[in-house]
Image 1: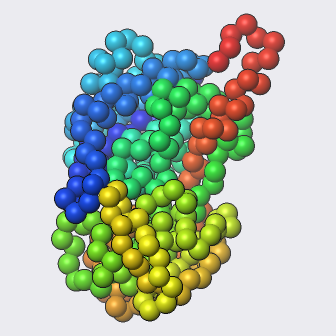
Image 2 (image 1 turned 90 degrees about the horizontal axis):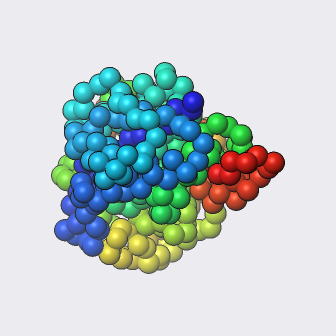
Image 3 (image 1 turned 120 degrees about the horizontal axis):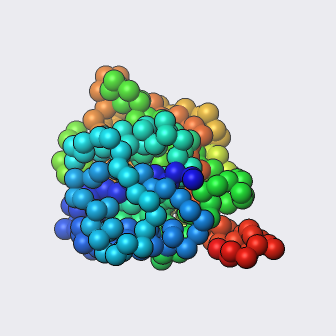
Length: 323
């Protein structure tokens, strides 16, 4: 029976962008309801086994109660959550060792980043429950659950996945960090709340995701058009082209871009000295030592719910059971 990992972050969608913009708060009960719908949707497909992170908010346990028994077989990883981003990374490492077919990630871009730090080339189903949600799916969770179960046995191969590039970011810490959407150099020397929202702080950015409907720095990059698969782009802010950007939910600002460059896989960018802090997917990190180096690398596979559902009519031709 295929194993599906489930990593839910009870701390997602709670940063300062609720005060400086109009970002929503996805509370514990709403996340539990979302997960319940995911689990119910999985039961509409072929049999699967779910192995979940025992998160500090007990989201999965709440979801199981809400689903009233309509869930796949569920068990929890043998770990204790510490209410930090390391929880998601450690859970992803354990799910990799278990040979999970996919990992469903309920959170925002930061949660997905932590998962990728634990398992770089994982097959991920990113479910939006964060702030910007630049790469997450916003489809009805019941449908996402069914698509996840349908994809779990590998019948459709890579046709239902999108391969993403990620950024390996060396800030001088003990180990490189990962960004799944963008690494942004800012000219302030402090971390503060961690979130990024003031255009006056922007120095430069390396961006891997330019979905036109995204918000955040990805929305600025999207103004320059699509990127070739497996590539990224480097943006330098300053006097030049004016772009009215959607920096976050309810946040609109004019941004000036001095230069834009497409970066192929393997490219390396040394952040300018003016970049005193780097924000990874919207969350600031200190730069230690002589500077920060960003490299474009191959990353995870993201499930396409639309393509998976389009394939389902061909899955069991001639069989009595229809999923």
